[in-house]
Structure formats: C-alpha cells, structure tokens
Image (cartoon, rainbow, N blue to C red):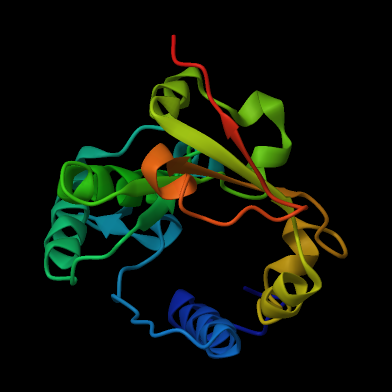
Length: 200
C-alpha cells in the first residue's frame, strides 16, 4: 500500500478495483464488484479478523466471517444459471478463496456444473496443497495449459500484483478441474489436455 502511495485500505481498494475493471474490459466480459473487503482488512469489534498473513492462509474461516460467507451465498443465489461455474480450489488456503469456494459449492454443486481453478501463485509450491483439496478431484478432469500471450496481456492490468507475485513474466501451468461431462464437450487443442483423474 505504501509503495502505491495509498495512505489507507480504501485508496488501495479503489486501485485494485480499477485493475479489475481494466482486466475485465480486456477480456470483453460482464463483471460486477460485490463490495466485500479483503480479509486482510476486515474487522470485528474494532479488531482485525485475521491478525497476520499466517491467519489469512491458515485454511480456517473465522467465526466472525460467518456473515460474509452467508452474504456471498445470497449473492450467488441471485445470479442467473450458467453452463459452468468455476471457483477457486483453495490451494494456499487463503480464507477469501475458501469462502468463495464453499459458497459456490453450497449454492451450485447440485444443479450447476462446478469446476475449480488452481490458485496462483500458491499452486507453484507443492507444499501449499492441503490434503483436503483432493476430495474435489472426484468425477473431474484436469485441463492443463501454459499462460498464453493474451493472458499475459490481461494480467498486465494488475500492476500492483504482478511484480510481487511473479517477479517477472508469468510462466506457469494453468490448471482447471472440470466436470467430466463439461470437459468431454470442449474441443481439445495441442496445448490443452484433459487428463482423467483416478478416483480412490
């Protein structure tokens, strides 16, 4: 925040939202900011809900965030039905990613195809993979491809994030877990393979 010249979280949040807008415009998609504060800045009773980075990535959603989880569920229920929903898998155990994943599972898993993306940059470190995520692999297939030049251009909108997260040009495999019935309908390309996942 200091390096971006922001005296407070509100100013930093506006910069981040502007980055989102630029990226969404590059992709040509409809988007909406829901207005939730990042977990690092959420407070309860005048105290931070998550006191430090360790708490943010503990994999434990604080009881004070129960209302946030419910508000996101309510927001998701108002969205139109879709052919596919893709949510964060939760690699890295960041609580914001876990909240979105759990809300998506509760709202859509039974009636709408739900897939998951491997969170970057956490997914580059095998030590960041909690054993609990492997239950999400059942009846899913991997989609694996490397970041395209177009994706690099989209990511360039995130000027506050890229130098810190990737230290240069992002070069890593993008991994999705998609429901089999969805993966089987997507034309395969040379750089994209859908790999069956054995279910224990």
